[in-house]
Amino acid sequence: MRFFTDGELSADPDTVLEGLTSGGEAVIARKGRRL
Image 1 (cartoon, rainbow, N blue to C red):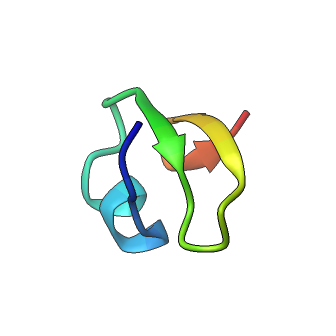
Image 2: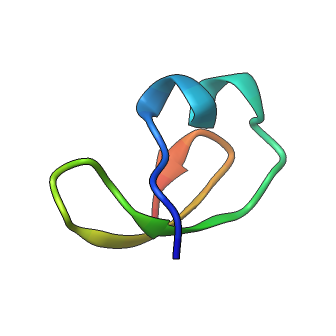
């Protein structure tokens, strides 16, 4: 798991990120949006 920011999600819209937000919420995000 890794920390990522909304800015990173916007910068890599086609990248799937799985990790923890700065708030400690476990999420899977793709195309700049949390799924």
